[in-house]
Image (cartoon, rainbow, N blue to C red; front, side):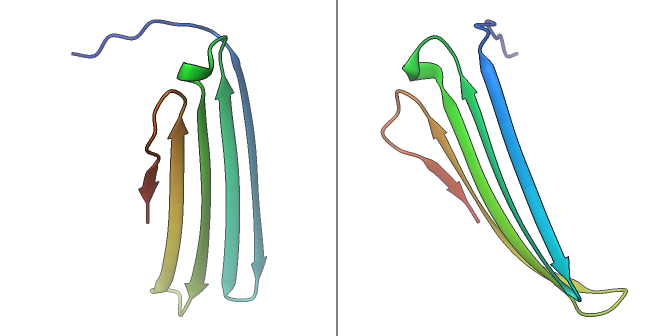
Length: 77
């Protein structure tokens, strides 16, 4: 079981995508700032997709999560 304590704060999110023909690219950035730097989080992600046909598309993306107070960022591809 997980327990959370609400600390409040400001959340800002920005997302953009662009499609041209069979190619789509996207980027997103999200920040959650609280009263202390040790609990702030930042998420940055991007992706690219290519539509081969109506039944098949190929895509690749990457995501990086930074949490304040830690020395290692999580990266997902």
